[in-house]
Amino acid sequence: MTNPDVTRCPHEVLLAATEQFPTPFFLYEEDQIRDHCQQIQALFKPLFPGFSPLFAMKATPNTHILKIIQEEGFGFDCSSQSEAWMTEQLDNWGMHTSNYTTDEELKVVLENDKVLLNLDDISLLDRLEDLGVPDFLSFRINPGITKGGMKSLLFGGDDAKYGVPHEQAVEAYRKAQALGVKRFGIHTMTGSNVLDENYFSEVATRLWEIYAILQKELGIELEYMNIGGGFGVAYKPEEPSLDLTKVAQAIRKTFDEQSAKTGLAEPKLMIEPGRWVTCDSGFLVGRVNVIKDGYKKFIGLDANCNHMPRPSIYGAYHHASVLGKDAEDSSLEKVNLVGRICENNDQFAHDRELPLIEVGDFVAIHNCGAHAFSMGHNYNGQPRSAEYLQTSSGDIQKIRHAETIEDMFRTVA
Image (cartoon, rainbow, N blue to C red):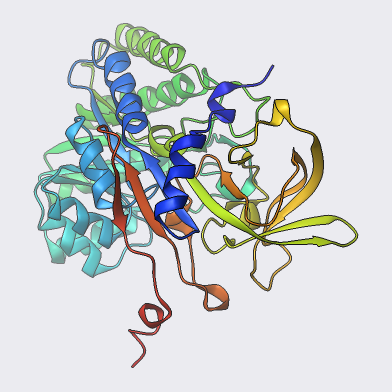
């Protein structure tokens, strides 16, 4: 069975955009982003008093999109100094979770009382003695479990560079108490693009178990419990979409069971999805530039892996549509979709069956609303592309200019 969440493509909108703007470009749909934000609020808010959703801004760090998500009641999950700066510029709230953090970055966060500090490492507490001790502090815990599709995207266990090992949790919070911290949270982020609805309640259970130990040993009552993000989206047509209703209900069940078992006051639930909010709202559109009949048929686009590197980095699958051509109504041919970078991994698709393609056709790469533009680069001296937003009114608005060659060399001393 084909998943319509994966195969959906607004052909007419994207074709209209190609008549107005040079390719390659990204186009995002405001209505799709708002719909996902509203789904999360509708599912979690009635179940969790004080529910506090954060958007993982690393997924799509464009201020136009961030403003939309902010308007839907989301704070921001920041993971760098620039993301903390963007949060302040947008006058939003959030939680800052970086790793191997510099003093300069810690200062930026400590000076913003609307951004909660979440430390990845006990050793960073020594820095706070000189930089300033916040009233609230959270720790990112490595609970020893992890889940996801690729080894490089696993965030828990003994090979993960993230988080305070759960065996060291009491030591971390005791030292923070001794410094004068008064209010506490707990956080973990152990998976990426997880499609198992039961996994997130397992994560919550681990944090509740640590919470019970902290309360017994140190008398700590947690204000926030942040179970992280990692809510998965289907990239392949045969994959099922994550049932977020089941996720919310399973976490609620865990909170009820653990609260009854431990007798502890329930902390406010935080989650920090990124991909789930924006991924299927975005498309990368490129024009067919060259068709090469070699050992295989290579369809050369003017879009490259520098625009959207996930296939070249992870071997990730992204669905593709030939605009104006319905795969069900056309003859199909097996092709490789490739870009112009001098690397053989600059290929969006291998041996993909697509409608017959001609030079001048336009191809849309799906699921490019998250971790796509944000992971882009300038290898081979290739400029990054423009970004556009189809607003709720139906208009298409430019939200980022395309880079020029001059832009890339503007910082050369």
